[in-house]
Length: 207
Image (tube, rainbow, N blue to C red; front, side):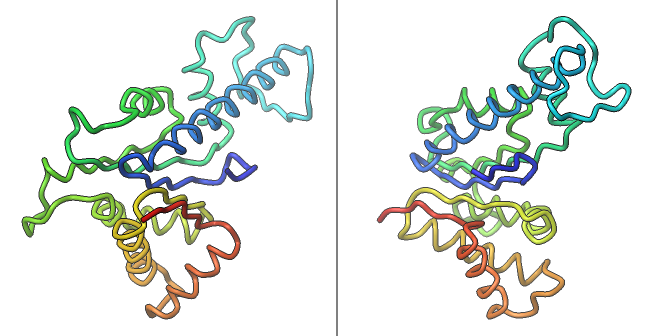
């Protein structure tokens, strides 16, 4: 994960590919809560810790009401980067791995956007099955801006035969469509290659 928690994350992991991202979210949650605890302690006058606090930044209380409010408050006030998770499976009722964990991270403010695709329950307008790349395209402009303007990091985990190829093609299409300085597929491919070289676009895939 990026060292700087302000960097947005785009996580794409259908099926069992989502497993490492649950660990990512737990890490981000612990990171935010730890930092929030330090800021809260600083606001009580026990330790400044290098933070520069403005009046009203952090409530001066002897006890934080809950980890939920702590994480959400810290994210809002310190500008923690957004986290988008794209998950897909066949059926939501018996194929949705880590559902409780995902929904819990949405509720506590760690996971900003959860995008799900259930291929045997949902259809595209043309009658085709809905996969994670379809959800990615639906969020196209916002996702493209996160990468092109906010330097978001992208992580893809799962099937390398179809999913990873289709997802990468979706990103190329988005770069061409929404990138002010990207005018062709060749330029989009070059930009994607530069992201991979700088470890801003990482894949853990298998066939």
